[in-house]
Image (cartoon, rainbow, N blue to C red; front, side, top):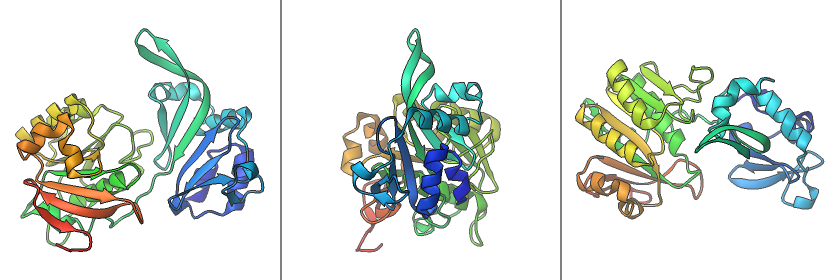
Length: 319
């Protein structure tokens, strides 16, 4: 990962301290700025403060305090000195920058009736660093391949446990194929620009040579658009969440496409208790459930189940 690509997003005061830190940016996951509060870095799975001296610290009293000028200057760098050009994205609470890094913002929402028109007085910034770990899904591929096809697959994971990273590598491997399996056309609905990390319509992450990305489009609408326009063999989406998504899933399955998706959850039982997924599970729509955990590292596979809940793999027990 290009270090300069990350540090140049920030104000001069913060950038100089980040450069002095000499962090392994492959291990940096979030950098949070909150006006009049310490700058916080999620690094190697732990939370640290950015010190006044440019050294990471656990002591808030030694941390660099973010100023209003830091917020203003950082937003100018992020938006290329043209916040107006990013107004549509900012209205959703985030924007994606070159490299696929996602910047969440918060402040005062300007309303137009029941809809958010824009955001002003931005006082909080969360830069989520995009990571691509090629090969991280290799262990799972034998579980989700079925002869010449792919199983309908749902990745279940608590936050920050690598579900998007895992999905991204599955997409890449399915799209490229290998010596034994031909590549397949994959359609990705990237509602929040996290899978492909698209910048100006071009995916910054490697999603394979047969993948088409529909960026910044609601999942339910995007799945149907891709089916109509791009004829994918596999459709992939991140973070299923509402009834529209569920109805679209049924349409995708009925069209003969294979589906790969993720959802927040801690266990199969946790998912069964969510009304949104109850019918999908009863009807065995998903043929594979992959449960992730993050006790030691992101993307750690805890278990793999088939559509009837039979455990195919469990950590420590093998397949």
